[in-house]
Length: 495
Image (cartoon, rainbow, N blue to C red; front, side):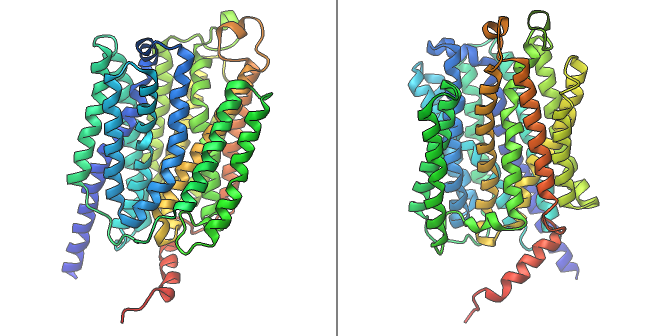
């Protein structure tokens, strides 16, 4: 009995050390996401391009991130999640080291896109933790708690990155400033290599190359079409055709996957009563968490004396709004495992999605004062932080044992697709109705901002409704035990 308790303590201690190392990885991910924002204008001047061309950086990285997650998530299940973490970090480090030493926009754009391999880190980390805790009691709770710490580390890194990046760009040459995150990623590589143990019992098998090509073509066409719509407007027939092609290519991909013994993505997971709503929630959540950031910033900076709406904030005041939002996300991520343990994971997810919806809909009557926007974003941030932590952990707990990495990766991929759609829709909406001074000096019309807030609020509430149909014990330790018991009879017997 004592030996069993000691073994349990050792296992938990080992897992805690892994989470500590992975928290550094997510801190680095957050730095990457926040560090470059204050210096985008400086980067544009260095590369000799117009400010508008900076949008290509976001677009190319978004497209590549949608492509790499399915392959790396599946490879993580096959050959080991740590191994793919090491590979993706090496690629990210190599790309980050190119950025300080080039003044070519084409080279910078390519390196920036490849740097986007960091998007696979969090799904692989959650899958690794879920795999490492396989023989521990309270597996789902442990994974949820670990996910909360990782997301807290990520958002802390984003805050630190934005503050440090903004401070350094005013005092140091650009190439030295760009070198800082590159060296941090290099350190990250060695932290993973020497500090993290591999997940036990990788599934093996072979990579479904045909499926990978089909889903890649679908994602490239879909995200590319959305980018064209955003650039050229809704009157562009070619953009609509390319977007529709991306949607249609999902059909042959799904048919192919259904015939495979070891598919790249088990599309049957989308029919699962527990996983289906999680994936849909991730897509709906992506609308607000990825699509609403730029409109928030531009609305805050808009001068109400000139345009009749906005807050007229300075750059520092705008950063405070974003800082409050990120701190609220950290709080929500850390509170998720505690609240889910007191109630239930499903109810906590419903509550988090509801908070996001309420926060955005509060913008409709309350958007004219700085304090009102702060309160709105505080509510949105609490719900968003919980969802960022909860969705991959929930997917891991409900996924088949051979698709853990794939399931956690899908929450990221679907969220990215939701964000891409929202970015396109919001970009078009903000241009509609912009007349007079608004067409010349600001990002969009007031009616466009109302569209952003309504869409973000309604999609979040729709996600809350969807989660009501999830089984009551979903994402809990009881559900995990039930899934294990159900799989036991079909497991191959030892000779």
